[in-house]
Image (cartoon, rainbow, N blue to C red; front, side, top):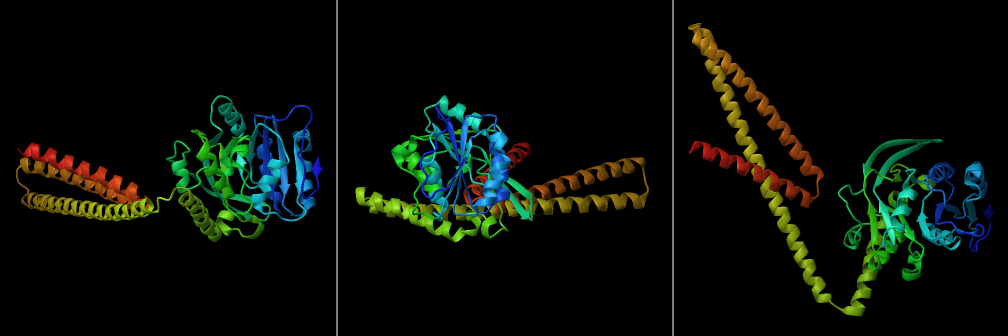
Length: 394
């Protein structure tokens, strides 16, 4: 069934309402829409309805793709064609308003789920007081060549994340729409998505949600896949890439909006200025500590390298002397022992070089805080080794 109207009413599906409504927003991307719907109808959980919101894109391609799922859909898929584009963020509200259900999920047309996403999320919400639940998410980097989508690489989103907290949400949206299932009644408490925002309405919604409720987290293998195409533009692009400047600008606007509201109600401007200065000083101190530890590590490694090189040169000199004299069998045994020790020292040096390279890779790839922790671990290890050597000498 399709609904062709600019302002649709609520879509009902018989006497009983589905437990889950899935809102799929799309515009001129039939290749992605087909993959998204295939992901939805591959779910092991089946008590759902799908609302496809076509935000003023071409209608025929959307209807053609939807028709391909007629048998699998069993009248569980509905289409809303916006006569005029309302924007990506407003399209979410259109789908929410055009459905009824206990739970809601926003499934963008270019993202996918693992088959058990809904099953595990619904089970979690039915057995907890959480108003929403997020899952481990994998970012899939891909590119499009004609009608072919090729995966280039994958990485886990926030791999060190073990829960969804308001404090972490202040920093970044670690629960993109594809990763989240929430109770519809949340909208009664915090409102719908902010249609005045051309981007980041999902982050703004998550901030409001977490300011009142908790979001559970399902750890383990990824159940949601956030697809991104860094090289794509136009209809095939991701807003996080093609509208990067908008993301940056509106992130600041959202933060300022909440900060101004807080100041109007509670003041505390002096406290905020003080905390900002303390944070700036802390970052400077962390940078200085990281630079110092890096210097210590490099100096220590250089000293070790020089020691190994000197020992190797000494052994080679002894070996050459023994071979030139061709004397007693004892010297031949010493020769063999020295060669063996030489080989072991060279192997240890190669291992040490590998560790140095690994540390340099960590220094480049890690955040400042993680880098400092790594330096601290190395420094403690080196101090223990120096203490052990001191005890042996004594």
